[in-house]
Image 1 (cartoon, rainbow, N blue to C red):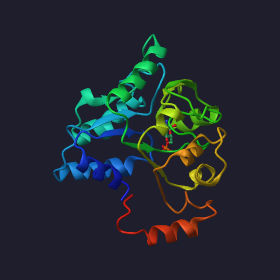
Image 2 (image 1 turned 180 degrees about the vertical axis):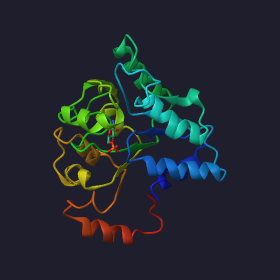
Image 3 (image 1 turned 180 degrees about the horizontal axis):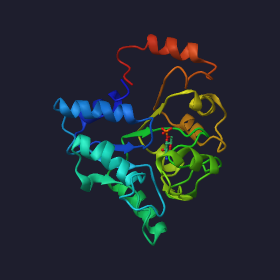
Image 4 (image 1 turned 90 degrees about the horizontal axis):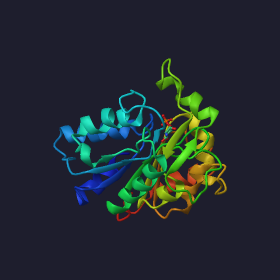
Length: 244
Ligand code: GLP
């Protein structure tokens, strides 16, 4: 079900521009896309832009987002590597990397569908709390909490302190946002994002400013939502003409 927005968009445009997130949350979507690929769906013209990358982590480090995207998307879906973009966190001139990344997204015609996970503190991409809601692709410093959360992927090596991330303003320009969250660890951030005030304190709350957002949750991640009965009945009675 969660892969539906991507597969529907791809059916309408084989050269779909997909914004891809890393982390556990989008993995079921990537697995479903891989199954579709095995069943004959052609992804060879799809174009991808990653949300973010660590600064100073070589692309062949298994925890780098270059490596994650290669493992979870490029190889299983048979993507064209020339059309898969991840910010270069190893470049000497990171400001130029940020500007070039923004220009590449624009040149591709913008992102049609943007997949998003959410950090326990409400970050999307690596836009940590207090990120400007108008921010563009830029260098950010990770919070101690995010570095702790992501330490599991680094074994003995240290989690980098900085990253390059699409900004919240950049993310808002994608035409459809699909935010995915599972597990009770996400419940507080999800509730703040969906029902809280729009505030840089919870960067994911910026989704409230977007006209087309799909939020996909399990029961645990939805547990702190106050209006969950309303969302359930809305979904159950969704008119057939109204797609995701
Ligand atoms: C990292 C990524 C985010 C991701 C978040 C949550 O910080 N930069 O894009 O959403 O982790 O990851 P997970 O889905 O594994 O909980």
